[in-house]
Image (cartoon, rainbow, N blue to C red):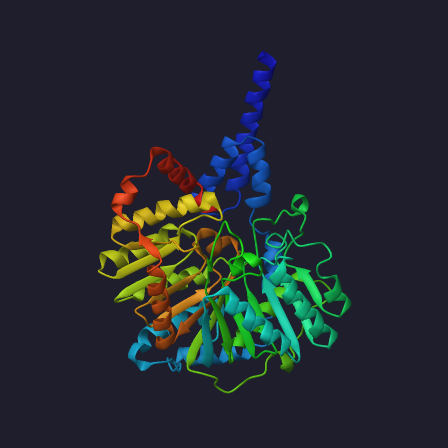
Amino acid sequence: MHILATIVIIFIFFNSLLAIYTVFKEKERDIAAIWAWLLVISMLPGLGFVIYLFLGRKISKEHIFDIQSQERIGMSELVKAQKDLAETEDLDVPESQYVEKTFEMVRLFLETNEAVLTKGNDVQIISDGEEKFKRLLEDIRNAEHHIHITYYIFRSDKIGTAIVEALEEKAKQGVEVKLLYDPVGARLLKKNFFDVLRKNGGQAEPFFGSRFFLINLRLNYRNHRKIVVIDGKVGYTGGFNVGDDYLGLYPEMGYWRDTHLRIEGNGVLTLQTRFLVDWNASVKNHNVQYDVMYFPFSPMKGQTDMQIVSSGPDNEIQSIKKGFIKMISMAKKSVIIQTPYFIPDEALMETIKIAILSGIDVKVMIPNKPDHPFIYRATLSYAEELVESGAEVYIYDAGFLHAKTIVIDSEILSVGTANFDIRSFKLNFEVNAFIYDRMLAKKQVDIFNEDVKQSYLLTEEIISNYSLWEIFKQQFSRLFSPIL
């Protein structure tokens, strides 16, 4: 027993030394994440270090270079032209009634993300899975030149099969089909699911890593983007993945409330750029070069002006988070947020609290049930803090809320793939549309108000009645929020 105790002590000692060396050697990691990982490694000697190898290591500088070195296909001249305009403060920003807010947002994303402002798009908000997939299948069947698709989750179920069969048919007709899926999000796919698509001339490839967890040391960095581009003319992005659960067919989750965008106009070209950069960073021997057919510049289709903004672990700037902070800090009347996971970092939480203390009407909506229990407990903890600060927090009670939206002053709107959590800001590859269109912003406010009718308000009375066990679970989960 004495020998065994000595071995255990030595093991724990060296585990602690290794933990300190491994975590602290990455100098750019923030302090909260360092302490969270030290807690994991210390509480789970040996196992914690294995978890860190798969989930905690930052992307190596070599891999960052490989991703960042991909050419911003098709958009470099537009970026340069808009930066020149920005220097003279002559950007043709929309709606002069709130020109100052818009100019600041446009300039921020142009400088931090090379996100070009595209004008006159036709943008439709889709908040129901049946409508989203019906429209998507129609657009796929009408494709003439190319179909480019990225999804985090792609299931081989009824709707997944319907989409792939439509892609197979288009590939057979000679339409270029490129499909990029996340190997972790799509881990349940049947091995031969894309065989017919490939046989017909289409391509389906994993993004950034192997489907086999035991050999995928970049497991923690996931492509959470959802992008569809058809003929460079029609685009989709937002919260919906591909699976029957997004149609509300999973009884345990109920109706799936999500928000997606269908875009026509030159905003699609910036989605195209994002897809092609991701494709070239992921697929060896199949790199895509600029082709005018991918970028068919079109006249104005509608009234919506927008920027497509991306972020991920390949860039420390965290452009989407900065956009959220900028929006909230500019608000004069209201901030309205919908998100399935609310785990903000200190900067974002302080910005929201400052808005509340400044008299801004802040409303947040989260789901009433978890799809990730550990994350949900942390979400509740932060939501309760908002209630105590004076915000209105609504719990959506008609199914599962997966929408990722923010509106300020019924003027500026963002819809995309990024949740209000640290994972989306720092660890996932994300994409959001920032929209400068009062009519569309007001429509999103109306959608939120309709969802309120199927929600209940989280009150201080409800919070005070939580059991000690529930409070412990929330606080314990919150300890790990920097690495969730």
